[in-house]
Image (cartoon, rainbow, N blue to C red):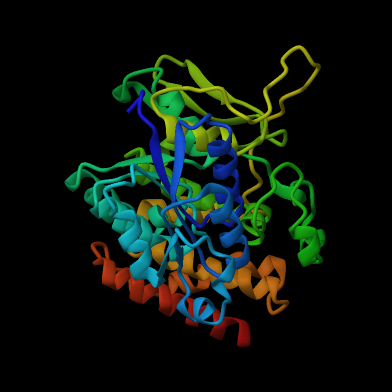
Length: 387
């Protein structure tokens, strides 16, 4: 594929990852081409993107939003597909080489699953897919000879670091965390956190759900679970360290004591491009690291008492089975409750633990059972909020 144009379908093109992916495409000098875009509710933005990038297909994944929308601004030669069926149809088209899975939350699982069933290369930005159904997704990828390439900056860093040695020589991986906006907050201060404060991330620009996850450090819990399945690691081989500058994106330690790190400024365009161009490396539109400038790189252990989500992530990674799907759904519902003013910041993680501890665990669930528990966990959080 090195000398060929790579045709890209972006699931969730109007979100932050989707828009950064389009920046990468625009800077590729024609070596990357958009053939499909999808959006849920931001349909004006979707039409603008379609006008600029001229894909063959666009998908409005929410049929209700689509039926109420005036499509007169859609380019006439771009075909409109609707609903989850439209996404499944798009990702299975033979013209699509790479699917960028950038739909936030559990909603991203079905599109990723359809792409893997079609044997596509998936640039995975939706960590919830592997949190919910890691063993099932990785098994499907093997059966269909599909590839999963990580887009999350931490997992991209691990992916790159692993290439420095043999897999049997890997001792552990170390995921870095910025610590979010409340790294130095006391328990009393955390109890007073407002929505606006939680959405003010010090180093990254992300959507509201992911930004809140960073503030609670639940994002690191989900990344532990994702890494466990993506890289076929034991949970005890995955550690977390707080690194406020967000320059070192993660590290791999080998049995001889060597530690390989991937460094770059905090900008998602670099890991996105690496997933789209792997194994090649191209010039990238992201900022470059200036090592001639004075800087400091700080590392500290996470405070598991103030940020208990990390411990919860290790527990779920060890448990496997239905635990990941329940934790992910409970967290999505709890974050939504916080953003709507129904739940305090420090209640998010306890709500998740409560739902997790009260679900009927299944060590070998079907995909259908995982989807059922996703719905159940959301309903349980609603009941938890109301009590």
